[in-house]
Length: 328
Picture 1: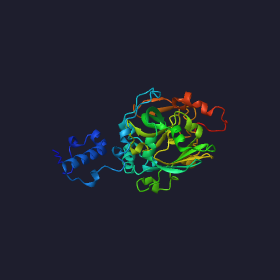
Picture 2: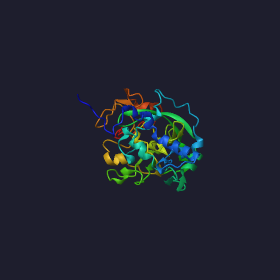
Picture 3: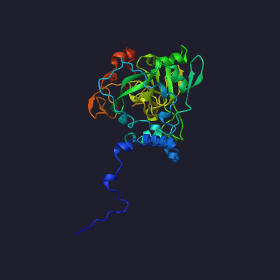
Picture 4: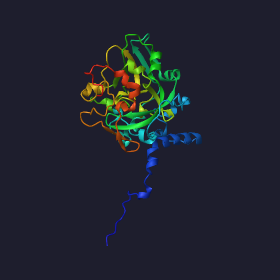
C-alpha cells in the first residue's frame, strides 16, 4: 500500500485565498491601515495608503459628477474589476492581463501634479491639476473604447470637454494641433528605464478634432477619481479613434503649428499613424479589424466605422486628401 505523507509546507485547497479577496488586496490593505489607526495599533509600512491611492485625491468631493444623458451606449458598461485590471500602459509593463500594470501603477504619486500649457498660447504657464479640475465643468459620459489590438470595453468616464480646456488655455490663431505628453518618472515606471521606446509618451490631435464635442479629458471613472492604471490624474478619451491616441497621465499640453509625431508613429509608422480612426475595412498589417472582443462579456461583435460615432465625427475628414491614412 502506498501511503502519501503531506509535506509540512503543503496547504489544503480549502486554505487558498478566494480569488475575489486576492483581487481586492489593495483595497483591503488601505482599509486595514485605517482600522489600525482608529484602534491605535501599529502596522508595517506596507499597509499604509500608497501615493497613487484615488481615495487620497484632493478632488474626491466632486464625484460622482452628473451624467450627461446625450452620451449613451448600445452595450453594457464593462465591470470595473475587469476594465481596471486589463490595461495597456507600457510605462508600467506589458502584461495587462495579470494585474501587473494596476499594481505597479499604484506606486506613482498623484500629487503634486502640474500640467504645463505652452506653445502658441497667450501666456505659457504651469497649473496644478486640482486647479484645472475645479475650473472645469465635470460630467460623466458613457463611451465605447476600442483598442487597436481588437478588444473593446464600455466605460463611464468623468471629465470635461477638450474644447473647455482649449478656451482655458487661450491658444493663438496659429495653433493647428494639440500635442500631449505623458509623465517621465523611471523611479516608479520601470519600463522607462529601458530604451525600447522613446519616452516620454507623446501624441496629438488637430485643433478641429479637439473642438469636437466627443473629445474629452478624463479625470475620473465609475463615479470616483480614476485609479492610476486608467491614466490618472488626467488622460484623453477619443472614442472614435483607437485607444493609443488617448494619452494618459498628461503633464504637458502644447498648442503647435506642426503635426506632432506620436510615440507609436515614431516607432512603427506603418502600423500606427497619426489619425487612427476606427474602421473595420482597414486591417492592421498583422490582424483584422473587422471584429472586436468585448472584454466584459467575452463575445465578439462587428467593428463599427468610427467605433459607432460616425454621425458626430465623419464630417471632420470630409474632402481630406486621399493620400492621408485616416484609419491607421
